[in-house]
Length: 218
Ligand SMILES: Nc1ncnc2c1ncn2[C@@H]1O[C@H](COP(=O)(O)OP(=O)(O)OP(=O)(O)O)[C@@H](O)[C@H]1O
Image (cartoon, rainbow, N blue to C red; front, side, top):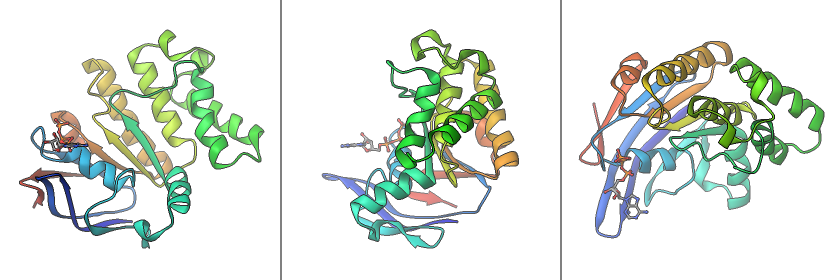
């Protein structure tokens, strides 16, 4: 469902990705590992179309994603890809429910009732029913991260990309979050690509991919 071919990316003189090839199947949970500075986040940003490669191509559902206009690419990204970051990036002035609703309304502002219902369902599924009207500063770290997962899921994206999603959580909350990813894969058939330093998570994944010397080590 996702295929990257010969992806290259440099920052000035620094050649970070030197021809990455990667194929990920529908419903797969893939962990991306590698030393600090190896280029894991750089690759994840390219797979999420947040950044463009210098060379190489990216296909998602056989669509050559970077051949689209910037406007179509933004719409494609909002609909097809969900992001979870280490620092959840929730909007501080909005409640948990509003944070989840906003990308839903951006993608489809015609049916607010249905989007609100889905946001409430997702938050409830993630054990946050009693916290939906609270702002991020009033939520625990684990609750904030689960809110970010609900936000990533609101548009039912085919792929969830996560960058150190449990990097900021204690081991109990990290374990819960990882369990949640596998539960979601089972229930919603989502594909997960997760950059992680967490040994347990990378062992639980269907596949572990290491970036070393600018390429994917097979
Ligand atoms: N915008 C940028 N401008 C210049 N250099 C950058 C930029 N973004 C990343 N880099 C450099 O590119 C290299 C790869 O960074 P990247 O964040 O992808 O690594 P990483 O494998 O995710 O590392 P970590 O595990 O420490 O998060 C690093 O040397 C980093 O300093």
